[in-house]
Length: 176
Length: 385
Image (cartoon, helix red, strand yellow):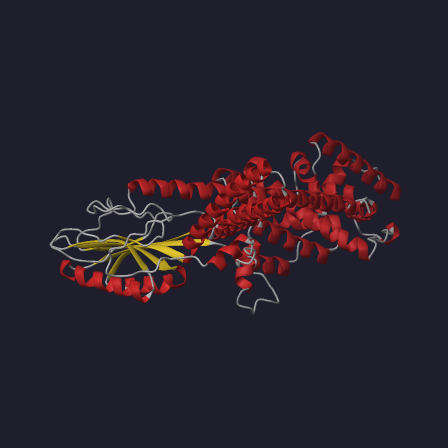
């Protein structure tokens, strides 16, 4: 059982929120989600700090009957990330330079090459799609947890993920 | 390069997972350990900590606290208003178990003057009615009745009440004295009544082991405070109660009725002067007499009402034994009555409070829900840009 799952079980058992344990179990995941969505490390750090601070201040409002502590935390983190996204959309258009495949070092293996292509493909995705990828592969949430965080059904999450993965794969294959 | 599979992409994504800087994590760890201290530019101010703690509370809890505070404020305001005027709380002036004299029946009865005379356990009272309609007098002490000046009555009858409220006051004070001091204390009570230009309606004293005294007084309302202070200084105060009764409404009603009667009298006089037939004159004259009688009754009623505000009823008891609550003006029945009264006020206050707070709370709830929906929609839109 993962540390995050243990934190969740412990929270459920105690009927409250063990914030310290939840923080230790989820801080890297929250950061990874924020960085994956925002594609900006500085902003991701701000969002991560903001998310944990908000969660800390609202910890008494966590209700175990409405979902896991981890899903609740990612709900808070998502709000913080969307606030940041909203703020930034007013200032500067998010963009990422396309990766020039030719710039990939000759010695790089196929996996490294794929990572570079993937990075470029992620930048081309819509924010909503990138969020799904960040929640699933960076934060490690299950489809059910993602469904709780973004407010759709679990099957809908699966469908959207498949579609986004296809899009990523096509982008990578197209660049080769 | 071969075409990549979803599985490979998933693996590459897992490898590409962004990792936080070590320095950032350490800083965040410290903030978590410290409980995310607020960094406010107002932190220098003394109330900043309190404001921070209040701000840290959940909105729902703050709403409850706010509602409770508002309810308490309304309760206090209502209680103050209820005590300051309209709630009638007459002081019960009981005749007492040892007195053989007629008790004063309300404020409309004829006030009487009693002179003190202590005589070994035998109660006495020398009753001297002062009211004109009673007319008999056998007292060595002449006391002016609390007459109401005709100009004042006319003023009331003319409706000059808009600038003031008519408040009847009453008080009840119990003193505790050594049996040997009861007589002297009684004398001091009479002196205090005299100093306040008050009137003794009824008094009884008894001496001996369980010596006691009882005085039913009329004190000019303007000097009630001074008189009560004087009574309180005579001996140890066992209890003291004051009450007010707003009699503005009956006063205004009576004065308006009097004005109407006077107008009818004037009209009848005019009719009488112009009447030419004898039978018509007699009919008008009879009606005129009836109206004049009615006007006289109303004037008397108005005068009595004004007397109730001019003079305050005060009951002074001097006791030397244990408190005689059963014989006093407050007992278990009064306790139930007071409890019911308080419960009634509390229920009324709660109802008023809910009537005020419920719509406000509903509006706040709707505004809060609307704000949440708007914020959620704006956040979702951020993903579409």
